Amino acid sequence: MQILFLMADGFEETEFVTPFDYFQRAGFSVTLASVSGESFVTGKLGLKIAADLALKSTDIAKFDAVFLPGGGPGVQHLKASADVERVVCDFNDQNKWILAICAAPLVLSKAGLLVDRTATCFPGCEVELVCNKFVEDRVVVDGNIITSRGAGTAEEFAFECIAQLGGRELSEKIRQQVVAR
Image (cartoon, rainbow, N blue to C red; front, side, top):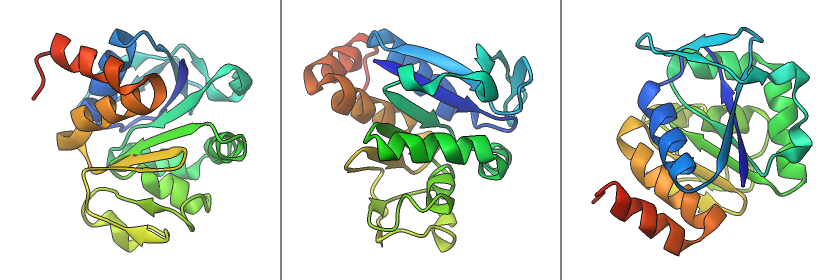
């Protein structure tokens, strides 16, 4: 399973680190794509990460899933990027997995991907969320799209993503490895 992380300055650190860690423990290949094209991306609280590549020059065909972390400033950058919109729309057209947490479902909403879906997002962001049905569940799976609420749900989100992409048994194995609730 190859997962493309769309990284922009201002991302929420917990929402990046937890899925990144757990996906790799599950044996998934994770590639960090810089939306700006810069070599490094800085989180909302100052965590600086090295991107593997620039989104503009990425061959997205080899990826099975795309992940969008939240964080208000980061999501604004994601929403402003035509490349990000192209990628999420392409993944949706191919029925590939789209994973978005916190305010990141707003990127999917802007692209028109949630109009017939049930979704969740960070509290307060629902006023901008255009979807068929908004729910306050911590993690929501609707077809090929998984959404979640925020940093406090990052672990549950990561486990559900692993369960959907690699099976419940694999998700439970990782849960036991990290001594999760």
